[in-house]
Length: 281
Image (cartoon, rainbow, N blue to C red; front, top):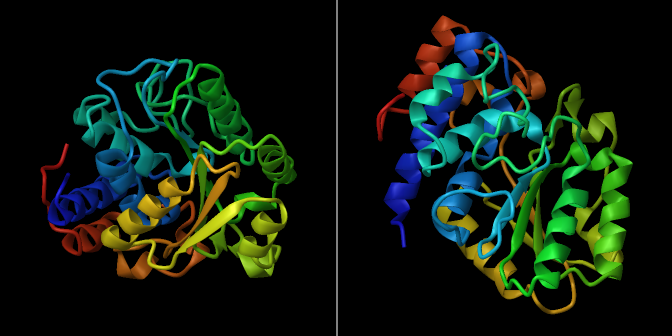
């Protein structure tokens, strides 16, 4: 088991990666990426049961599907830092002919990426298909997915949510990143969603809350509880309350950094707030 300090150090380094990647090409989505850094670090470095190497079949291991694909900077950083491809490849983020496109794609064969997820609202449908395939194959591993709260305004999600409970897909844990922000403003201003707990429970899911979604220990505890609730006839939803732009003070609590790159001065400030821990690429 990784120590909390190791996971926190890795999270700090991932934040540095995010800032440097987006700054270099003056393009990308730092806000949601920073907010999900702790979660994805904990998921890949501690929670998921992963096997050596990568193949698209994913038999004999837990699987993860990123639905809100615009937070690719954190996804790429965590994948590289947990051994899927060389960390140095982060230098190619969003460049011509790179494997690290702005939204994850599969045609270039980047290890760790199982679906193209540029269009929002589709990830849960794919994750459910993978979960059912595991059941058909007699594989006892779990499928994890991550979704933005703004993304949940997409109708396809709710068809998938309804399907999951109707078909008793109980080997999936879908996490909703509740940062309250989306590209045009707060989620409450753009399209209020009401209670996610009430909605998911009404659709027949088991729901747990992680109130401190940027706290490694809280994430580990909450996800352990979620895992214990699988295999009981209901899909599991985790409501993860995070802070947009977490770890960089001027990016926090605002939609302004949803898809905006820091300038040179802002990059320096962000990096100063997140001292190097495991080595830059």
